[in-house]
Image 1 (cartoon, one colour):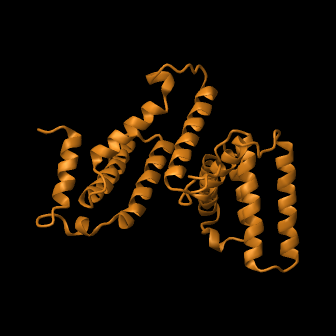
Image 2 (image 1 turned 180 degrees about the horizontal axis):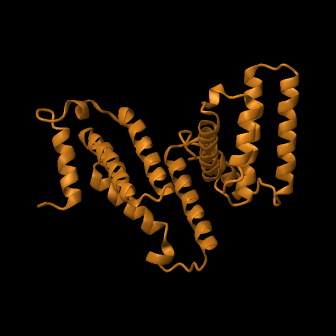
Image 3 (image 1 turned 135 degrees about the vertical axis):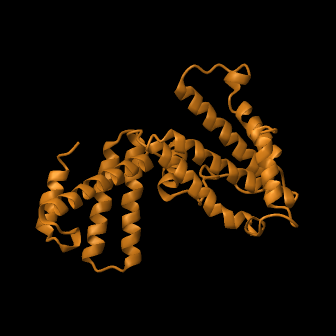
Length: 267
């Protein structure tokens, strides 16, 4: 390999996007069309980390890097910015947000660092709001494109920073009981699906609040719950095959439930 790997990757992308000799598929792509692929690659990075599959992680990080190069090339063609601008911007941001490393600020603990980080981000949002002539909100800048659990957590953290939060976790559990009761009332009252969806959303939002108070990432917690359910249900399938030679859809619910109870005993 005669060139530095990153230089070669940029050259490859230029070839792929060449109007005369490039790849037809790559030439058709826009920010919008490749955005879903970018999200998909980020999830595959997460999966490799969860599986501790570090050889695959290397590949998936490369796929994610390609997405960044792809977006940057499209932007360069539209004279918006280039890959070097992206790198320079993140370098500037990291230096600015770590004044205790690259400057004279004194920060000794992780909590102090997190507070400093959020304060600096808040100042950046304030400047951006002034430049865009938009009213500044404590919730400003929390992307609506985030997955719902992540956005709920970030909104709650922003509100908490300005004092809108319970100091203890007990009132949050009380709020969960209240929201469950409201969903039950709506269900018994034959409300329409939109009302039920609203009440269920309140429950999920409150569950995120509980996770935040426990300092647990709700997305990670649900990811682990999904993994646990998958492992247990697959064990149920195995037991049904070994003991009755049938699939789950051919079993009675008591037969499924009995094997589920056994699957739960496996650690």
